[in-house]
Amino acid sequence: MGLMRLQKFLSAAGVCSRRKGEALMAAGRVRVNGQVVTVLGTKIDPDTDRVEVDNRRVVDRSGLIHLALHKPEGVVTSCDQDDTTVVLDLIDLEARVYPIGRLDKDSTGLVLLTNDGPLHHRLLHPSFDHEKEYEVTVDRPIPQGALRRLAQGMPLMGTRTRPARVTRLSASRFKIVLQEGRNRQIRRMVRKVGHKVLRLHRMRVANIHLGDLKPGQWRHLTSEEVKGLTAPSKPQPAVRPRSAVPPKSTKARPRPKGRTPRKP
Image (cartoon, rainbow, N blue to C red):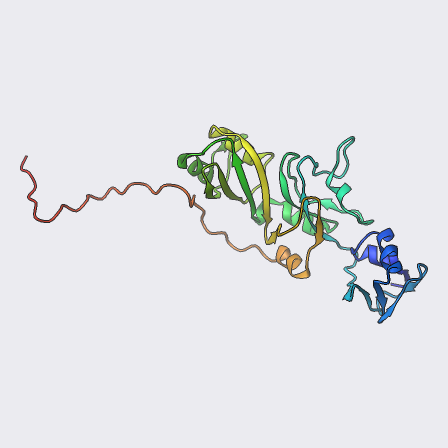
């Protein structure tokens, strides 16, 4: 690969921006082959030198970056939009990354970003059946029948939505797991059952959980998490509304003992 400035290596490896890398070096938090390096012009060989930040080794990921971001309300899931804060404004990296899918401006929660083209395609393509989990708050108590309709699928934008897993959390809150992602799908579905979404929060995409990230915070995915995203899709079990009221049995009730049925 040849020699590279240390702060550029830190940026290319996805640790931080070059400017932040210089600050880390000045603070004595960067070591090369066990020695603290503070000189900004220092060059390293990424193939042979061992680089550590805060005693943790920095691994060159060949330029591939995979991030998890907690998108706050009011931020647009886009790369560029005039007069509006976009998710890339929250990422302090020199490398260019792109959001995987969308989370509408009024919604909050997990957004994945990457410059990994094949993974980007994999997670966007509907044939891979990866799950997305949301917590939904609606304007008033939602009945069991409405939750059942959400879980079973309904006509929407010319086709029928796929079955979902629905779990009630409270009178007006529920969790829903989708295997598709149409434009404002959950808001449209909830509107069709006579309610309005007050809060929509995404907690999980496939095997990646939002965890304890605060709004506006982001982190790098671990190698295990990236490996989970690229693993072959497993057949998904049939889904049904966990919160739905089971249908009444059609079997005749047993007659109490000691009583003789009336004659017609």
